[in-house]
Every structure is written in C-alpha cells, then in structure tokens.
Length: 246
Image 1 (cartoon, rainbow, N blue to C red):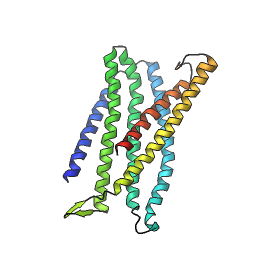
Image 2 (cartoon, helix red, strand yellow):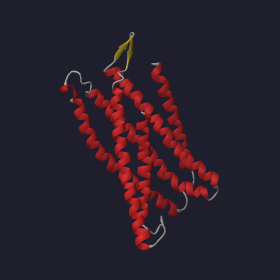
Image 3 (cartoon, one colour):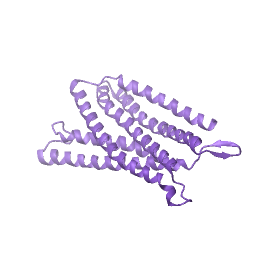
Image 4 (tube, one colour):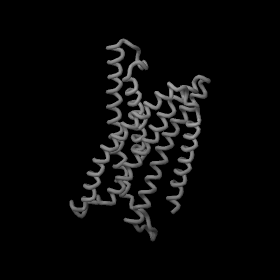
C-alpha cells in the first residue's frame, strides 16, 4: 500500500494548503458596496455558465459511458468495459472539480485584490498570487486523488497479481485520462468561444457604437466579458491543465 499512501498523503496535504489559502483570501476586505455588487454579478454569471455547460457535458458523458460498457460486445480482444466507464466518469468529475475550484476563488478574489491595491502593490500581489496558487495546487491534488481512487477501485473490481502482490489494473487509467480529456475539451473550447464572443460583443457595443472606452462600467457587456475571462481562462484552464497533467 506504500505506492498509494505517498501520493494520497501528498494530495491531502496539498488540499489542506488550498483550504488555508482560500480562508486567507476570504478574510480579506471585499471592498465597498459597488465593488461587492460587481463581484457578485460576475460570480453569478460564471456560475450560471458552468452549470449549463456541466449539464450538457453530463448528457454526453452518460452516452459515452454506456458505449464503453458495451465494449466487450465488439470482441474478446477489446479491453474496454464497465470498469473503463467508471474510471472515465471519475476523470470527468475530477477535471470539472478542478475548474470549478479555480473559477470559484477567482471570482471572489477580484474585488479583494482591487481593495488591497489601495494599500499598496504588495497586498494586492499577495491576494492575487494566493488565488492563482489555489488553482495550481487544486489541479495537482485533485489529479492525484483521482488516480488514487481509480487505482483503489481497480484493486477491488479487477486486481492484477504481480509476484504474489495484489495490484491495481493500470488499464483503467486510460479511462480516467479519457474522461479528463473530454471535460477539458468542453471547458476549454466552450469557455473560449464564450470568452471571445463576449469580448467582441463588448468592443462592438462600447467602442464602436457608443464611443466609450474599453471595459467601461457603463457598458453592460463588460460583465459578460469578465464572466468569459473566468469561465474560459480560469475554469477552462484548470480542466485543461489537469488533463495535461494526467
């Protein structure tokens, strides 16, 4: 079990570090009422987008998992089965979780970073750097824990005997990687398309039509632009990094 305890312990310690960073960020001053209102609006927009995206992905994941379960019908040499489907679903969940954690803390740290900047460059850098560290650590730790879970599940349902030792079946990791890749594709591509669409819409409505500066708060499309930055460049990036890491 040593091969499991080390990565599992490292992942748990890393997640404790993530919790410590999140608590420190949330304790910071969120700014005045206007800043809090804008931050809440961006939070709600990003959350709504991810809810809708994850519901769409859930439909496709269900269909793919069913086809994976039917793999043995294609022939004896096909090593895709219901066990691969389990690992596939775990990969999707881990990738989605990594993106969700990053997006949640990013939308809560923006106003706090702005407020901290009124006290100097270093306080603002501390909050923004901590928010980025949350995403980075979450990606690695969630990926580790997902691999540990897949390995433990494979030891129970499909063990491999190597020199008298019960080992997990490494073939199940293929399903885990495929699930992480599918979620990363939707998060990165879907979020990226929304981001660019909102960015172009805000520029056309603001600079071209109304003649106001870019990112001017009088332009309502700026909120959609900021939502796109979070769902594409934070949530999408988190899922993409986890897929690459796995």
